[in-house]
Length: 449
Image 1 (tube, rainbow, N blue to C red):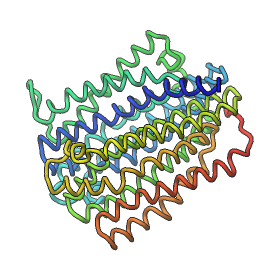
Image 2: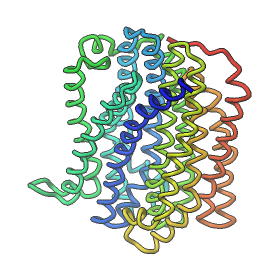
Image 3: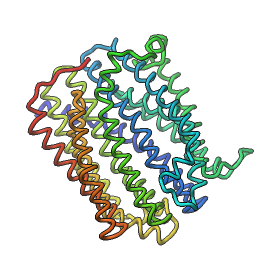
Image 4: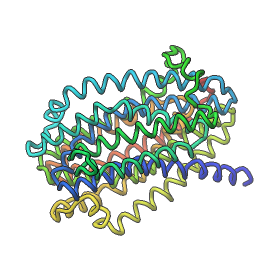
């Protein structure tokens, strides 16, 4: 009993800023879509929504990279080996910059062809391509910002990322409407306004974050020692990729599945695409809550493994499951109480609003089993075991979600696509829990660094 109280307290103290951070991270996109929907109409919202799976696909790589880095940082911090932390950070940033620069150059040149390949409806193709081009060209800023805020959490610091994300969101919220319409001498950027606002806010926030970390002599401050390690350390990179690559591949497969589903959605017209975007925005909040809990389990679990405390790891898993039921489930229940009010933030067209409401009823509750599944995979990832959880997720997506979406869309129409979400998330929960309890929990655990 005495050990449970500080664990709950530690978990909550870590989790609360993390949830707020992820909420702020999605807030900018959400409010940008509100501005677009209210100021430019449904077609603008549909154009931005068409790019959503592409952005998810690209950021899957950086999220996988940050996952591997934070696990290693957490284990090194838990073991008291602080000298290894800057080596891990420098290697991670070097890989992230190399990858994101390549994405910017290639994606910026072929943004229109990419949107055509996604079967973007002709009436929104020009706007979708313009938005995609700016988002892709400024991708390195977003990559570095995400990597830094994620890695800072590896040492148990969730307040600094929260402050950085709050500043970034505030700058973005001020700039977005000004850039959309044009104000104070600024030219009207239209649909590309939110993309430019994100780039500017990321730039300013990164500069201020660097100053803040240096002044506070933070473990991840971009000082001379970190700059010396801004290179590819083969041994460390191998360990980062050993954890991060399976995580990235799992996210990429999920993104590819989203592209397939978007192709099915686009076949029902631009109203369906707009409804898809609005529902994804709402589900993003419930899933971000679930993913925040998974991240907390992974980082706190990595620190426990670094310190050689297996019993604490088991307690962290139980705590994560409980928080998922209460927080993710509670948020789902609140949204179900007023779905039209929530969706009305993004949609002004009555027909699209009615369509989105029906889809929300079908899919939203599945965020709870999704969250429970990620607790088990997060715990295994904390020990560096990411390959098998990835295979289980890929199996669920390829063998269950996509066939279900295709079959049900033909049988019952547009709603059938969304029925695939609860089906696949429940399957993931059963698969991850089964492997964790029956196989992984019986194995020996050792730290990687």
